[in-house]
Image 1 (cartoon, rainbow, N blue to C red):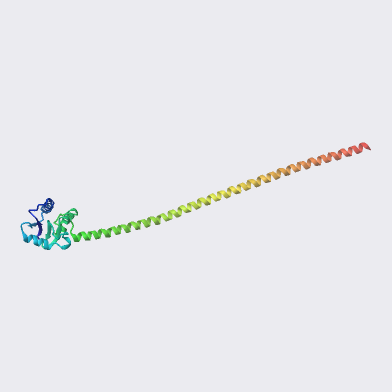
Image 2: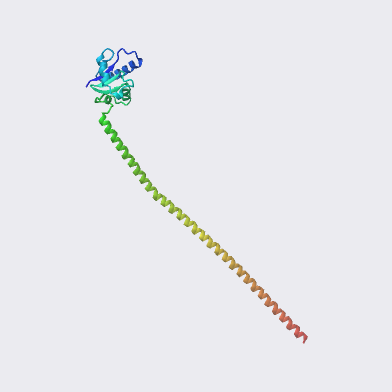
Length: 214
């Protein structure tokens, strides 16, 4: 497989020259074999390039500008797509070449498989997280029930204490009433005793007076 880079050696555009230099320098740094094809001095190269660039990849005026990159007859892309591939560390995939041993770039098929695997792993992790969340929720439910039971027991204890206090208050009131009644009864008995004594004394006095009169 031969990588073809179509260039314009005599271009007057500084931007085009810079883009061409970037592509060539990067390919050389990667030690990728390529063939530079000048479209400025060779009409056949220019015609072939314009004919084989896909219509959807051509600019509005229909004339593609260099640099344009091909792998044999297959179109790879222009400078912008090359730059994006470089940023994504996927230049070999962009060129349609297998990455060399030790390269950080992963082949397209493996990268897609890895992405799928990562998606499955992410889904599994998410399901695991949801399962853990459900387990934690189930563990929290008994805790909530225990808290409610503790509150109910506390309320029952308070109610029981209040009932005891009410009973004690009633007992205290009843005891006070009984004590008052007893005190009133004792006072009544003393008054009756005093009345009886007074009547007896009056009777005795009357009897004495009657005897003296006789």
